[in-house]
Length: 357
Image 1: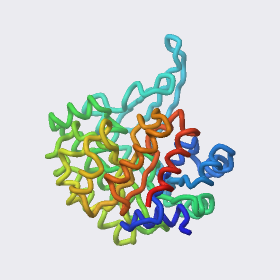
Image 2: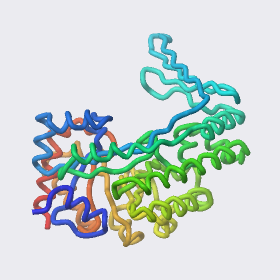
Image 3: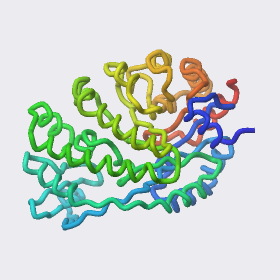
Image 4: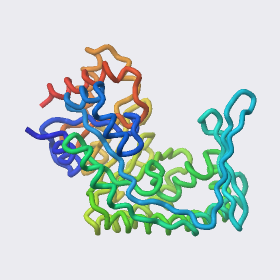
């Protein structure tokens, strides 16, 4: 009988598993470090689900970024009844800051064109250190109950340069405005990040393990099909070639609307579309995905709303989704927020998948 690891591996290689797997992100289990994951997997509630066949997706941050010549200052203070956390980075090029309020995003690093130059200075003075020994520890913890996926520095922040500027540096409004205005400093930061990203892929190519994830979190409305073609696809090609030279297989985290770039995705070099979600979160059903991307693997996220359905309806929903997607090259996952009803609903999903052939 195939293990969860066997079934997930078969799927990610484009094959047909004995049983369609369902997996969950490690950090959705409340585990950021490998030691935390080991502890969570032993807890009664999680062990029960693992014994029923739930798989674990362990993200292994196998590259560490080390900033040189950057002074990082963290300040926390009360502000109108809330906890305001401010992080400053001081460099010879100047200072930038970001802030959170009660743990929620509040202020981005980039606020004006010169801030891109400060960010570029930081990137150009950041070293990358391989931490290959972490892979063996992750493998030991997960065993046959899931798969270890390689990420680069920052773990869930490992993404291509344009998405890194969008999500990690500038934020939505600043990014969209500056991209539309073709601010030169944004392009300069993009080039520096591209050089860093490709260097990181070379380290990942030499690492142990098979699967590499780029956590793109793409919102296509922010860049449009033209800039996807001009700024993302070339990086995908260069990065994929590097990783393939090391025997790696690449996946992208795409959980949003994809229909407007479906033809470009079909021609893109990555093998696996991870976290792909049907409407209403996404805009393509799984049968439409199959029609557009017959050669891609779908590691598919189940809609948040299905976890509110009564058991019989949830069972039928899962069966319908599997029927639309087919059994070949398909796995399901919990890749977004952990649903509040997970203890009750995950067993229903696993049982439904057991019933399918």
